[in-house]
Amino acid sequence: MSDIGTLPNVEDRKDTRASQLVRQIREEILRGEIEPGSKINIERLRERMDVSLSPLREALARLSSDGLIEMEDNRGFRVAPLSLSNLAEVTQLRVVFELIALRHAMAAGDIEWEGDVMRALHRLTKLVRDPAEPQTLEAWEAAHNEFHLTLLEGCRMPLLLQFCRILLNLNDRYRRILLQASGGDRNTLPEHVVIAEAAVARKVGVACEALRNHIERTGTNLHRHLSRQLQDV
Image (tube, rainbow, N blue to C red):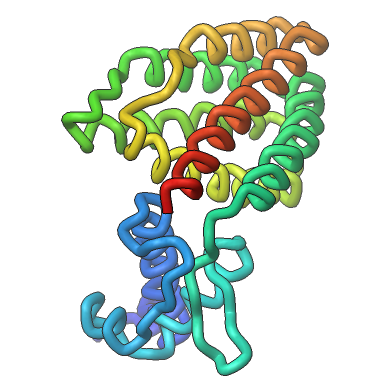
């Protein structure tokens, strides 16, 4: 006879399915497969993902708290649009929150954190982005995201890290959509190396300035790409 205590209850299964949907829909939004500003047809999305309405609505509500989905007054959902003002705000907030997290990480991070940072950097440096091979872009973006989050995780401040994750996802949406259209970005490898090496060496001023410049330079490039795209519309 099965031990009933080892079986997941209905709420656990529901939460697991909703969490899976959050990850799946988030990735489709970040890749631009669900277009910015588009209204979400819940019934079509439910059929395509072969799920019931309850976990799908829960997933969309969670994504609205991350800024990727907008809830409308009639209880509909729409993908958050891209805009120059939103990009500027995301860039500014990334600078503020990530510099706070990095300073705390350098103060509290231990040798395991140092090793994690350098391993994340090593994985990133081994990947090559080829616009002709979308899978290489996806692999690089995943490693890039991992590097930035690993760098900050040493701060040991869960709420601050959650803010940083949300902002990084919002920023990545601009990166992944616009850079696919432009065919690539500058070579950021030297920037990541400087940030990582300065961080583990506890060179606070160098690391923070390098991270600030990295975020702002990316924001400037994305602003330029988005401005051109909006002018062409």
